[in-house]
Length: 105
Image (tube, rainbow, N blue to C red; front, side, top):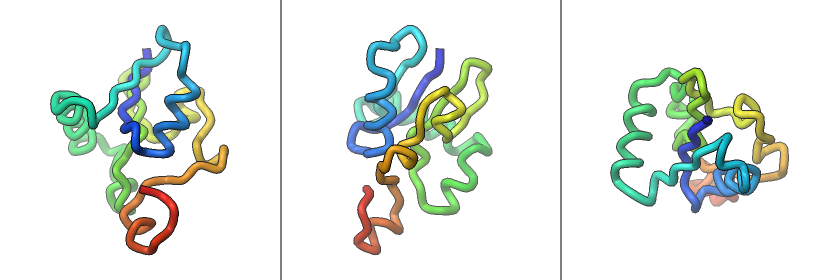
């Protein structure tokens, strides 16, 4: 099963969540804003896994995040067999987008 860490207020995460509806045997979606335990799980991954290096350098939150069945962590929807929000015209979340008044969170 692929575990997805996301947040319902993130447009990219919403696009992923929409794609996995009805596929509960393949994916588990964990909303990092729903409980402190889930946020701590995600923060531990973000603090320790190299997959987040580039995201952190760019001021991105690092969600959606995919923990694949082999334990590998990825920030790419395609690695989980999904379509990226960017390919569907979605917005991405970054601090720079917000500061510059661009669309995103």
